[in-house]
Every structure is written in structure tokens, then in C-alpha cells.
Length: 306
Length: 231
Image (cartoon, rainbow over all chains, first blue to last red):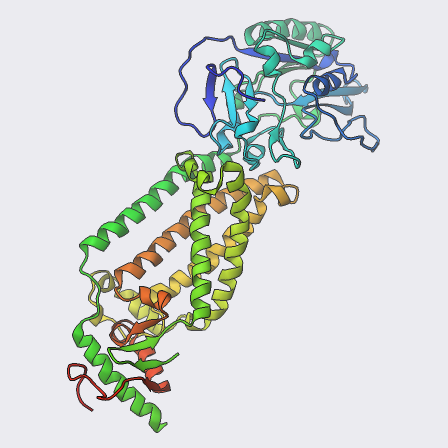
């Protein structure tokens, strides 16, 4: 994707200034109600279709997951989990639509070394700007959800754009438009939170007492949220992290190390320069030249003797 | 390796051509690595990527430069390692590092081809190049992205960054010493140093070289009157 809303950046990768807020956008969000999902993969097909992507024909390993993981072409993926609920004894089929969560505090953007390759719009969408992407894979390490994939064809990173091109012209993302059960809805973040509450109330009334929303605070909240019937155990849903955070190692690498490293090298170079022009010059004296001649004669004579 | 009495001065061979060529391959690849690595290390230095034809080219080139550095340093290591084993005199010499910095070398013990600080630089570079190469493989995403877990790659990144900073500090010391100690640069450009330089900084080495034999390339008269006492 290119940076479509050129004036509406909230954050730009590898850039220290915060761009001025020209227009004030609503924060948007996609709400995925896992309890309503029937696993039809219409969202996956719509994503490929809208973004004009093709996935290679895969192979069956006994799971409905197809392909088996996110790829540079598959930006959203239905992940199927069969879970036996120990309380009810029921077999539950947990289907989660995986993809970029569009974190308020995006680890990919923090890790990215290329100015403007990852941007966050004022509406909360985190987007990869391919023309600035250098294919280093740092975003992969920054992401707490293991989402970005680097294409071996053009060495650029790809992930869900939340259909930033559609959203910028007032359309809902392709997956939300295609969903036949209304499990995927799209709107302002506030509206989605309010709507989610009605779903949670409904689920609780039907016996899912731990139903809740997944909007993890460790990454500042996300602009893709889930309604989960078992919100107390998100890891049931194909390993959705309980409390996702940007890795402390990444924070240290992109924080203290970056500044301390620059400072250390800068001070060392400056000290060397100043010492070089101030300190007494370390040069060979004429006396030493003469003494050297004497020593060479002595040692050469000794060498001849042995 | 030889001490030569020439018309104008006495020189001591320090590095043959093969070592000098190899040293400069190492030095140039290291400088290019520092520039391309700095571009990826801090956004304020990203502009350096234009030296390599843009960010994507910098990303693609940097690891290959690392391979060049590893190969040329490996040869350099073999060429130099036998002179770099630590001796007691190096510990004594290091105790006088203040005298070195203030230019009072007359207080220092006689030393061989390398002094303690040079040996420390040699071994630190060896260690850091190995660390940088190993962690560099871990974060070489194009070829090794699938070979390491994301968590391993995160640690690879931070260790690579810290080792690179340490490497730059060592390199600054190394380059600085080459400039500050006058006459040193000739060792790596022309391959030889003056007799006085060898006497002042590496007297044991000069003794050893002189004992091996002196090549007299002077025409008659044999010695200019102002050089050295008569035998």
C-alpha cells in the first residue's frame, strides 16, 4: 500500500517528529465476533480478491487451516481449534480470523529502521508503505502477534492493511463486507466497543460467563478486536497471547541501545580528535634515531657471533 | 623481514605486501560495514544508505560485506596471531598506559612486535568479529529468517548492535593510535618503519630483527657523520 492519507499520519517509522494533525479522524476498529463465525473463509477470499493476491495451492495436513500460516499473500487466515470444554464436556470449534491487530502501540513500527516504511494513520490503521520498505524483517521481530511476512519475490513486508484504501473512501474492509453472518463488523472504535458489550451480554445470558472483549492494553489497545466466548483464556484460540507486549528485548534494542550506542561512539571519536590535537605529539626524537643505529650495530654483531 | 641501511635512513620491514593488502581489504570492508550498519541502526543516520544505493541495497549488501570481512580477517588472524600471545611484559606495559597517553614512553619496558594495547585490540577484534558474524547470520533475514525463532532473532539483534558499538570503539582506538603515534602509518602503507620508531616503540622486536641480519644498501661513503656513534 502507498500512504494514501498523506496528511493523516499519527506516527511514521524511523522518524522523530510527530506530523501535524491536519484533519481529525475518528479511530476506527474492526470487531471480530468469534462466537458468530462459521469458518466459511469468505473473508479470506475477499481479502485475496480485493488486494488482487493469489495463494499457491497447498496440501492437507488434517486441519482446515488453509494455507497453514499467514504468508506474504495471505493477510488474513482462519485458524481452527477443536477444544473439549472440561466444564461442559462439549467439543467446541473455536475459529479465529488471524491477521494484523493494528496496535495503538505498534511493535513493527517501533522496530522499523526505514523512515516512512510503516505508518500509523490518525484513524489507528497501521500500514506498510512498500516503496519505503527495505525488506530487513525488523517488523517481524517487533510484532507481538507474529503477523508480518516478507515476500521472497520482492523482499518487502506484507500484512493486513485494514483495507486502508477502502476506509479512506468511506468503505468497510473487504472481509467485513463479505462476512455472511455479520461476525466481522467495522466502525468507529467507540461504536465497536459499545456493540461488543451487547454481544458479551448476550453470550453471558447463554452460559458463556467468561465472554469478553479482546482489546489488549499491553499494546495500548488494538484496532482489530475480538469478542471471545472464553476471554479469560485467549490462548485457546490458536495461541492468541494472553497479555501481548512489545518484547523487552526489542524495547531495549530500539530504546537505550540506540541512543547509548550513538553517544558512546560519538564521544569516543570526539575525545580521540581532541586528544590528538591537544596531547604532546608522540614522535621519534633524533636521539632515538641515533640510539637505534647503535643498537642495530650491537645486535647485528651479536647475531653474527651466534 | 629485515633491517635495511639505506642512503638516507635505516628502515625495518614490518609488513609484507600480502599482509598490507589484506589489512586494507579488512579496513575498507569494516568502514563500509560501519556506514551501512549505522544507516540501519539509527534513523538519524539512515541517509548513509544512499551511499549504497538506497535502503534495500544497504540491507542486501551489509551481510555480504560481513562475509568479506570475516574471510579477510581470518587470513589476517593467521598472519598475526603468533605475535599476539600475551606475555608478562605486556601486563607491565599496560600498567604504564598513562605514560603512553601522555607521550612518556621512556618509562615503558622494552616490548616485542606488539604492545599490550595492540594485543588487546587484536583479540577484541577477533572476538567481536566472531560475535558479529554469528549474530549477523541470525538476523540475515533473506537466507536465515526461517532458521531461528523470532525470539532468538530479537536477541541476535541486540547483541549485534552492542557488539557493533564495541567494535567501533575498538576501531576508533586502533585508528587513533595509528595517527597519534607518528610514523606508525608507514607500517601499513609502505610496509616499513624507521629504525628510530622501532627503537622507541618496539625495541625488543628491533633487537630481534637486527640479530637476524642487516641489509646494507648504502653506497660509499658508508655512513653520514650525523647518524649514530662510530663503532
